[in-house]
Length: 178
Image (tube, helix red, strand yellow):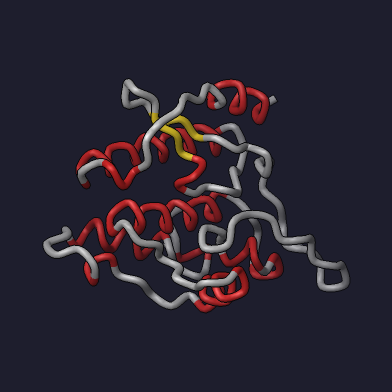
């Protein structure tokens, strides 16, 4: 029932503009709206699993809509050692390390937090946190957990904002916001 409610609530899409067209302050406000939608989904026991800018649509009134709930569902546990790992689903560069390698830990709200960290980095810098050119390169880079700092690309960025972005992108789920 929770997933159906989330889909019904968030699939009211309108043609919109991307984040890159707005000033940083407005982009951050929009990002916070996305976070509120994701928080609502998490409260209903739903993990989105495919958070990325392309799934965030803006209407002419400035409202943001979160799209593509096709991979959404309840949290999942890593497979037992004697069980095959499930197939990978999501968008490399926005997928959490545990989505790429399910044995690393459960896919839960913290997985969406990692994806939101990737989106936040892009919201701030207008460039991707994960820079690999191929799917494999993006997956390897995500799994490596190499720290990224948005202050390397934006002068005068408040430390608290940069540190929040970095924490969301921590390799280990337990090191992220929960």
